[in-house]
Amino acid sequence: MPPSHRHSVTRLVVPLLALALVGGALQPLPAAAGPRTGTATTGELRTTMRDAATGADARGCLHLVPVDRDPLTVVAIGEEQVGRLAGCTGTEGGAVVVTAVPPGRYRLLARPYEPHHGLQWVGAHGGTGQREKATVVTVRAGRTVTAPTVRFDPAGAVTGQLSQPDGTPLLYYASVSTMPFVAHPKYGSPGAINDENGRYTLTGLGPYHWPLYFTANHMASQWSGGTADWREARTVRVRAGRTATLDQTLSPGTVLSGTVTAPDISYYAQVIAFHSRTGDVVGVSDAGSEYTLRLLPGQSVVLRCDCAYTPSRWYPNAAQIGGAQSLRVRGTPLTAHFDFTGAAVP
Image (cartoon, rainbow, N blue to C red):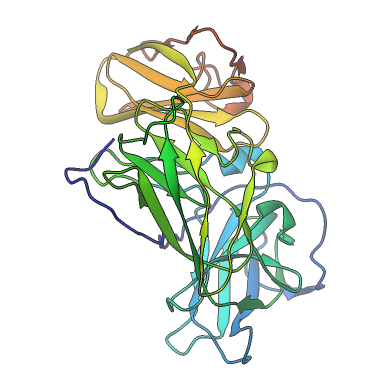
């Protein structure tokens, strides 16, 4: 979904979200839960943002990213897949308070205001670029939990060459980011965009090992190293004040296509493919009466059609993800049709 202009762009993703998700519960946070607060059905999270070197208060925003698959799939057009719950510091920096948090498990993604600070997943004793190494915070109803202090390190960057399978530069519109997203047909993607030579530069990353997420027209979405699962991604080492290099060859993948039957298809209709295990977005297609996705082989996906002026449908005809049928992606084309003319299965 290319924007109207084609030129080299370097963009740090900075969405500010403040809606609630649903989650489960598992392990407690290293810091003990605090006193009862809020309501009987939600909890509260508190932490502090500081400069890692000086200890001075820092400014930024904190996203509560669901750990469990089902709440992670609550993402729609124009959104990055970082959850719909966030909190920011005041103008002086320091304290962050996130209220009305549904009980569940979350990882914390910290975005700094200042360009000299780098993005990070929040670990127990500092930042990390890998989601699986971030501290898992458990929020309980009626409780305040104190998360680890966010310690912002200096920022670095990643640049690289995007190529097609035959080795030629990828000249199609592509985006490079740290998290999956559902691009908006009008506003494009939140990542760094490749230039006319197929090169990209992504700035504002903390000095850690990062996996990167690649999307492109006519290509399958993938993580660095050519995988659909972020847990298997190849990482690149970012250093403060320097620019690392990560080249990537993208694959056209396997075609999954189908039809959409609905009394009235919405203006910005989309079919979204989610990884069956992780819940990550692995493909997005604009939809009309038909749609076409390109997906990496070797994964299983569930599909959601946000296609009509009625609630979304999970393939083949479910109202909730629990009723979705998982499809195994191999080397041969797949077909999946959506029909909104009847009632969805609850």
